Length: 263
Image 1: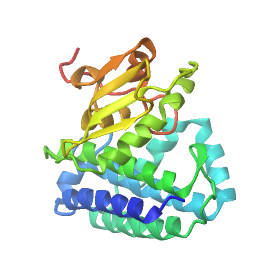
Image 2: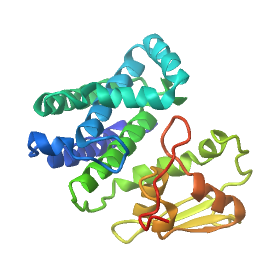
Image 3: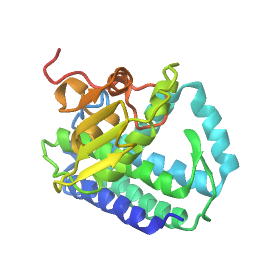
Image 4: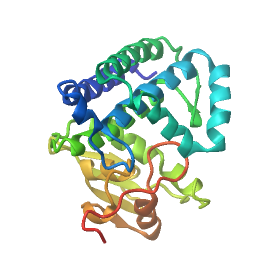
């Protein structure tokens, strides 16, 4: 049985870090453009508030979520963009409070989900611990966009292990949503953690592998950086392909980011 509380604590800490970036902003700075095309700081927070609300529905009313999922399937990107627009024009203080309230409610709801229960989501159904990890990954990724808009350098934390974990676990998903057969064998993924330790997944004697800094791997799998701007090494043809298409988030294939060099 997975103890969900440490995951909830990590999710809360990730939310609080991002909250600390946006809470002091005046209204004009909420309209700053972020690296996500067409999305301001307000769009990023609105998206997180909207997705938290959907996660609450998934955990408390699966039938109602099923109706939302059917609506989203028709046009996944437009559905997500509409969720971001939903609160982007809202008064910043009100949007911030709505996001905070949703974060607290989501933590309460997910803590109460019985062990073994599978919750619907925008991909395969998952247990509450996996949904918490997915929310942490999204909070970190959208927080990265906000930090870049504000020209703030965030120090990587040990919470990146959760983001990296979901990046590893979604390997086959990244292939399937592009109509490609997933590799038959596991890869060895070996990442340098912020504290100097090494985080590993997969068999030590795997023929194919990925190595590099954990931060770079997280930036890649959340599609916040182009591979050309990261210090990641792939060994093996399938591992090379994975680094070109890696995607930790559910939904249709993401366009990724252009190289910072412009190439």
